[in-house]
Image (cartoon, rainbow, N blue to C red; front, top):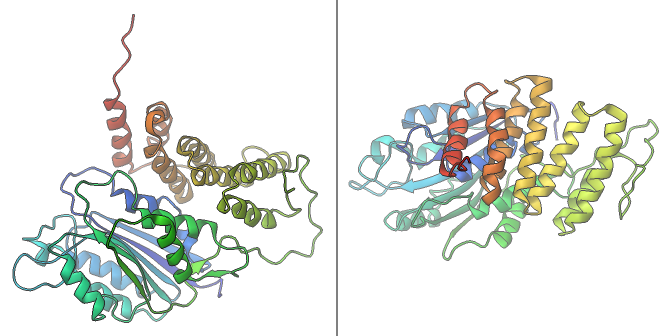
Length: 391
């Protein structure tokens, strides 16, 4: 892998939504909140999110621009597929103003997307988690069967039947794929095989009946392996933590994380949390509570809480991580905003405890420019909770 290569992640949210001011669909929001820059096997990367886009020409311009990057290109498509109500059955990705009657003019023809990505000279991966209604389904099926849908690209993903009501959480395939991508594999080297992640996601997702499973082609080094340990430096390793967990933490931080993630992936969540807490204590003693190193271990514990299904705790930890980054990098720090988006996603899954966490989350969003939609979402949730009667 060339660590000097510059890549791009493009997130396309194909969700028709005329309710202006709302957050993107939960699937797109989960992807954006998972730190897409870290997905790529590249030294540097651009991340472009296109939520609720209006006009196919605008989206095409972004696709063409993304295709000019020299390194790996990941395009993740969520939302709805449609065909025009009249005159043919060409599959389109629905955009903000699309309806079956208007999608011929307001949606993105799928052929435009595949043709633009075909111009990319570096490794390319198209990930898809989309929905299609009963009228669109046979047209998508035909396009998949005759190869028009993949058009020679490396593609993984699913198309599922449109549900009766809008989902309240991210689609199961995306959740499973993000979990596998975030954990990585300790022995897979620096690059992950998308096909293996895809198969893992299919096995874990519990998809509804009758999905269209998409797996085509092979790709080069696109997805980075977060569990890959870099070669050990020549300098002596630091001492082991004073409070080792079972199995005891290794001597180097770069070796600790793969073991922690492996424990979490095996369902040993208490063990993973104990190891992470032990390393965090050592980092706090070495670097201090306001250091970037301490902040990173808060983020590790936050993700472990999410993997264990404790979304309220994960939200609290991601908020702490976001506050840490905001204090160090200011309100325009992209990694601070990414941590805050992850906090927001976990908060949305926090059930009855969401109302207790909402004021702290709102206070953080109010520090970030251009976050009116997110802040409005929190305020709306607070408005749904009856105020206590003063006595």
